[in-house]
Structures are given as structure tokens and as C-alpha cells.
Length: 73
Image (cartoon, rainbow, N blue to C red; front, side, top):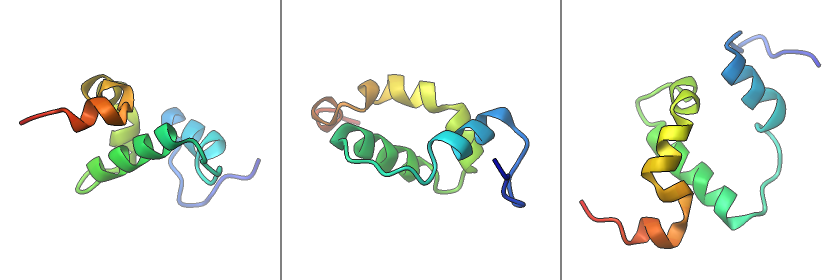
């Protein structure tokens, strides 16, 4: 597979680039997860988000929309 010129050599980013990015999503939970991760991306690099993905999954109840909707400050 050809690598993009702008890419990083970080294995986390390369895995995302090669196996996740550009793939269509139809599952509502997967779409919600991506929306939540993208919202955290504001001001942070995408690589930072990818490296902290497991912590976000824990903090956001594995991105279960019903559980996240019940979260309070």
C-alpha cells in the first residue's frame, strides 16, 4: 500500500490510516464514537486522540449514546 506524503510514521496513526480512515461507517454506535472523538480533536492532534482512544472509550462508557446522554457535569 502506498503511504500518503503527509503521514507520520507512528504505528498508531499508520494503523488508523490503513484500516479505518476512508472506510464507510453505517453502524450508529461507530458513527457516534467517531463524532465524539472528532469533537475532542479541536485543539489536539488526531494522533493524540488516537493514542488516548482507550481512555475516551472508558470515560464515555464505550460510546453508548444512552449512557453518555445521562452524564452530568
